[in-house]
Image 1 (cartoon, one colour):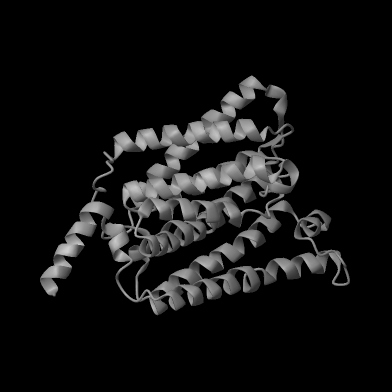
Image 2 (cartoon, helix red, strand yellow; image 1 turned 180 degrees about the vertical axis):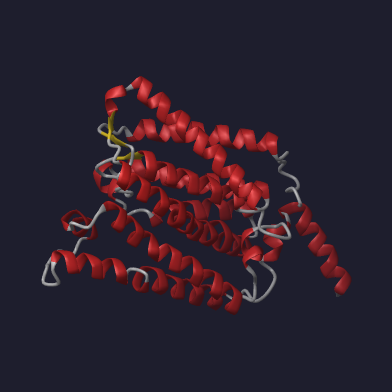
Length: 317
C-alpha cells in the first residue's frame, strides 16, 4: 500500500506539480470547505464591515433610509482615504480568518495553501509586483499620449501622502485575501474535485469575476463590457499560479495593479475612489480590456522566459 501511494504521488507530481498535491495534506472533506467559506464570509462581510457601516451611519445619520451601499458612499462626507481604509478592513479580517480556518479545520499551513515551494517565495511576489507596476505605468503613459484630455491632474500632496501609506499597508491584504482564497484555497479544492487543474483555473477565474459583480463599474458600463476584464484577470492569475507552482507572482501582480490604480488613476465609477494623482474623464471599457489583455500577455511572456516555465513539470524550488 505504501509503495502504491508513493508511485501515485510521483505520477501526480510529474503531471500536476507539488502545489496541488499539498491540498491532499490534512483533511479535505466537503463539509470542511463549506464551514470554512461560511466562517470567512461572516468574518469578512459581516464582522469586517461593522466599522465601515458604523462610520457611515454616524456621518449620514442612523435614521437614514438609504439601503444601497454605493448611494451610502456617495452620501457620506468621510474622506476618501478614510473610506478606503475602512473598505479594505473586511479583506484583512477575511485573510486572517481564512488562514486560521485552513490551519484549524484542514490542518494545512499558509505555505501549503499558497505555494509548492518549501516556503512562501517573497522574491517572486516582488518580481511580479514590479513587473506589473511597470506595465501599468507604460499603459497609462501610452493612453495619455493617445488621449491627453482623458486625464485631469488631481494631485493633493497631503491627501496623496496619506493615500500612499494606506495603499501600501491595506491593499496587499485585500489582494492577498482574494489570491489566497481563489488562487490558493479554491483552486486546490476544485482541482481535487475535478481532477483537472485547467478546469479549476477556469472555474475560479469565473468565480473571481462574479465576486466583483456589485462593483460600480458594472452598473456604469454594463455587465458584458466590464465582467470580461475581471474574468480575464482571474483566469490569468490562475494560469500563472499553476505555471509557477505558487500564487506569489499572481499576488504581487494583483497588488501592483490595485495600488497603481489607487495612487495614480481614479474615475467617477471606480471601485477605488481615492485622491489619486489623476482623474480619468473618459473611460472606454473595450480599450481597457484590450490593454489588459496585451499587458497580461506581455507579463506572461516575460515570466515564461524569466522562470523557464513549461507545461509538463512546474519548477520546484
